[in-house]
Length: 418
Image (cartoon, rainbow, N blue to C red; front, top):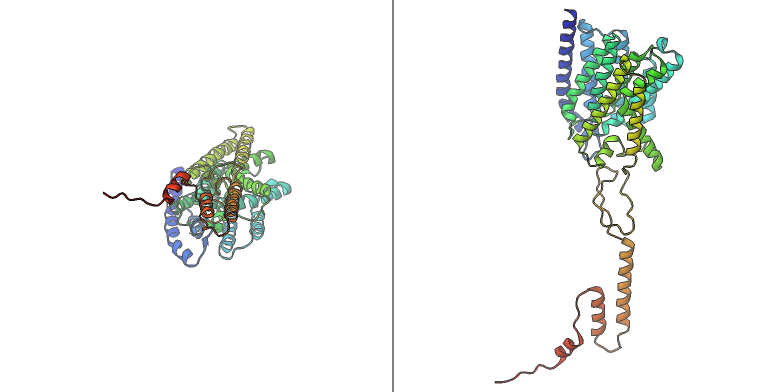
């Protein structure tokens, strides 16, 4: 009876979270546009207050269920939710006032330090867990640069981490992640391509912190090596996206803080995949990695399975590094007209140059020089017909009249009478 009651309570809570987030995200779109809280890095400005709906609904529904005794969270999940709400508020400040990334990273690290269970992890592993939570939380923000990616990966990861927490009999974190997954699903109704609202730093940081913090709680008490493998498998997509962006900007000589269309979804679009297809591909990759992480956590597969996930992620990163994203490629000599490409910079379109631009300019200069030489060689006092003909012949490549035709035209016209 208690199991059925728990399932019914979780179902009602998830349904309420889904519906409330869908309604609140639709209501927050107009205020975001009016206040100019938008993402200007896309083709069109997209409001950024969708994360506010996710944070408010997740916090209110989880708190109400805990107060009513329907789905009690417990002290660990309560601290995690409070810290994630503070991180979400910090992200909202970044959306409104454009805070620097180092302040976001420092605030996330302080919040993570208040959540990590040092008694079970130890001081060294606890410090490493704090750094990992802060970095992966920032990586989740990078997934919000494309429509539907952050929400889809967040839903898949929430179910995986929630399953790990349920295996460890942590009902509070499991229910909290179920509420988060339902809220993200309601948000996806407005974030699917073409997106009408986005998570912003508020929602992406809140989601990333809640997922990584719950994963650390679920893996506390295990060995550091196996725990690191499972954590990386559960968050393979955001980690791969962050590594790809850092490597590509470093190799291109760009500042690490300078944005650009160099994330996973952007490179998949450059390969010809549609926006919806990129979401499906990344969601499928995240699902496969999360399944491996859950199986490794439960002991169904060995620890080497996480190494396979890491190897696949590394191969994908190295392959996508070859995709040009920072501007049109330089034309090789003799290449034809290139198709239009989309460079980095707010949806601007740049058209490739014509075939062999230097050779074309050199030939034009030669034509003008020959035309001038033909004009200068004409005898003084002449009518300029020869020079004009030479000039026209040089500029306009049409068939010129022969000498016989010129003589016939120049002869007097004879008319025969009767």
